[in-house]
Structure formats: C-alpha cells, structure tokens
Length: 125
Image (tube, rainbow, N blue to C red):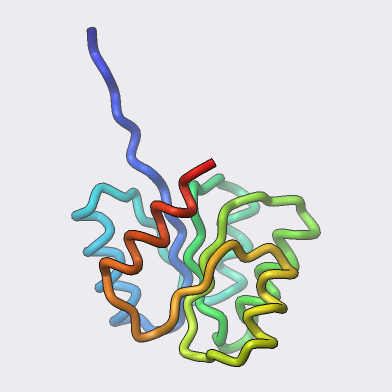
C-alpha cells in the first residue's frame, strides 16, 4: 500500500523581504509548501487563483494592508484559516482582525516554535 503525504500549503504575506525569506526557508524545512507575497495586492491575486491551507498575514504593509486582504477574503467567502502577524499589540486591532475573520494572532518578533504551534492550531478542523 502506498501512502502519499501532501505538503500543507501556506501563503506568507509580509513586506519585509529578509523575514519573508527566513520564514519561507524554515517552513519549507518543516515540510510546508510555502508561497510568499510582498504586499496585499499580490496576496489578493494569489488568493483569487489558488487555495491555501493557511494564510500568514502581516498587518501593516504599504499600499494594501492586511485588513484589506481580510476584507477581500470576507467579500469573496474565502475561508482560509488566517494568522495575523504583527508587532502592533493594540487590542482594538486584534478585535478588528478577528471580526474580519482572522483565526489567530502571532506577535512580532516571534519564536519559530510559536509559529509552528499557530500553524498546527490553524490546521485543526
């Protein structure tokens, strides 16, 4: 009997290129199929064309920010579990992200163990 394991897919959206590359490398080593985007419009384009198991989304980005991506997902009924990653700890932002459909919040800077825990939580039905 042959058992094929499919890699879990994640879209990671962050305007900080060095962090994006670091997270992509780390998650790839951990078995994730990682697609990255450097800003919100690119993320919206990818979400329009492809399904992902999880979305890691930076909140503050130039041009199209994370909240606009969440609004787009809500309007298009895209149900991808979403983890907001931000150094902005203001409670009203966390609440607003939750209202728009974010499932979890990870504070920047983050520990890679915490990132994996958040990704695994997002995968639990």
